[in-house]
Structures are given as structure tokens and as C-alpha cells.
Length: 285
Ligand code: SAM
Image (cartoon, rainbow, N blue to C red; front, side, top):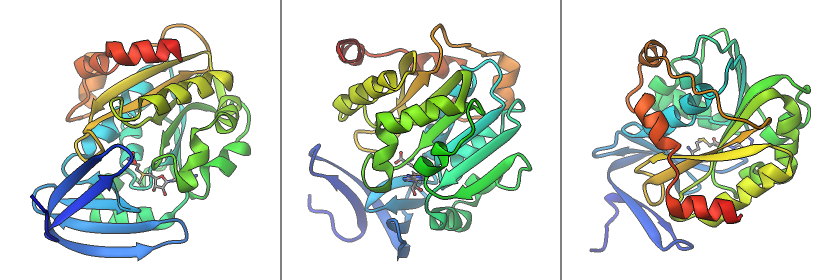
């Protein structure tokens, strides 16, 4: 069935996949020095932000991604006080991070200020914590920021970036991971959105190898549903600065206090349950 202009469609030639949402209308479009940003009002997913034609965030399903990019890692660290988010310009991950009382400082390093300003306008619910005194919104390249980050100054690095192309490409490589490693304290963690386990397994294996080559002691994969991204099945990769098991802090009261829609102790555990074909590829990697 040919889709007419009353649909938004993201097609990915490399994976032979596409994703469509029935539209209301495109309400904004602009070209920034970094990328092309568009905002659509959709028929059933609320607002949709795209960057260079790729789906980024929708009103309806962003909770899956933002909760799973933050809470599993934060509950896998014994005392996450200082957090940096590289990318994350829609501010949804920042909002989730700031739900944790242990966090005393959260710096969001987003290269394109226009993403945040448009999110404030169309996704105000994601920006609800931007005024938290613990939050700092820094606009600049995450690669340059991490290069100058003081040694052992962070407990968690969250890389909530676009796909490994354009300004985000350097965020998926060994050199950047070396800078992240030196900025992390002992016991520190890095968590990075790592695309689809079904469509991008080779990239995931390469990322885990580069993290280990950079000096991280261990890497793990977590996965979760994310309907608007290619295949609808997404992942994040966690790299541990020091070896050993992750601190699984899953006190029911603490989890209930997060007021989440997807994340809980069961989905936390399920996210770390790695499918056979993925485990085999990572072991061979
Ligand atoms: N959830 C989305 C995904 O998985 O594709 C990512 C959301 S967030 C909007 C991605 C952000 O990464 C964008 O706002 C983009 O401007 C930012 N970004 C890309 N490269 C960057 C870099 N080198 N430094 C900082 N931010 C970067």
C-alpha cells in the first residue's frame, strides 16, 4: 500500500526497513548548523521530533527509552552522585536521572541548542526538571567536553546520542571511550544507546570491543522495546570501569518513588537477560 503525504515514513535502505506514523501535520522544520530538525503532530503518537529524517522522540512512547537509558544504570551503581548526559537534547533522560536523590549533579552536554528549545516548546513534560538546581544544560560537542573533563570526576556517563553518523559518529569509538574512562571514578559506569539488537548486532559487537580496548573491564547489553526506532527493539550498552558484578540496587520503595511507567525490578532484570544470538555474538566479539 503506497503511503501518501498524510503519513510520516522513515525508510532505512541499509536495513531494508521503514516505520510510519499517520500524521496530523508537520508543525515545524529548520536546518541548524548541525542537522535538520522537524516536529510533527501525529494522529496517535502525539508530537514526533525527527533529526535528519530519523525518528528521535514521540510523546507517546519516549518513556520506554528515557527510563531504560537511565534507571538500570543508576541502580547498577552503588552511589551515583555525578552524572553527565552526552546528547539527550530533548531532556527526557535528564528528567529521569534527576528522579534519583543520590544524584547531586547532572550535566547535559548537547551539541545543538535548538533541539532543547524545540523540546521545551513541543515536549514540555520532558523538560520539567530542567530548572532543578542540580541540573546544568551545556551546549557543545560531547567529544570536546569529555576531553577536558577532570579525571575521576564522574560516576556515570550516559550517551544519549543520535545514530553513529555526523556529529555523533565520534561518540562510538575507542578514543572517546578512553576520555570517558579517565573521567569516571573507580566503579564508574558508561551507558550508551546501542541501536537495535536485531538490525545492528555487528555495531553492538564493535562497540563492546572498542569499550574493552579503551580499558573498560566489562561490558553488558540491556534491551527494551522502543516502537518508533527501526525494528522497534532497542538496546543500551553498559561499560564498567572496574570488573565485578553490578550493584543491583532494587529496593521496592526506591523504585516505586521513581514514578515510572515501564521500569521496575522485573523489567530491570529482564533487560539484562541477553538473548542467545546476542550473547554468542558478544562472546565471539
Ligand atoms: N533517542 C535518540 C536516539 O536514540 O536516536 C537520541 C535522542 S537525542 C535528541 C540525540 C541528541 O544527540 C541530538 O539532540 C543531537 O544533537 C545530539 N548529539 C549528536 N552528536 C553529539 C555530540 N557530538 N555531542 C553532543 N550531542 C550530540
